[in-house]
Image 1: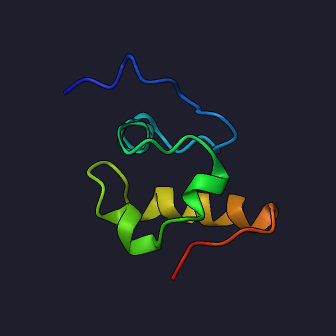
Image 2: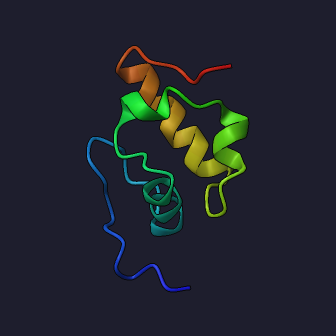
Length: 70
């Protein structure tokens, strides 16, 4: 499946790559606040979201005083 139609960046999320963006959009996740409602494991379970994307999201969450749900 092509991800060309998926934007390179969504809302206030850091750039994490189109496959990961596509997975987050499909799950209805468009903000860091929404990301913080998920655990690392939940995000890694989404097809297209890998360890690198989760690491980038973790850093962005920390910059905003947020964290993953554990």
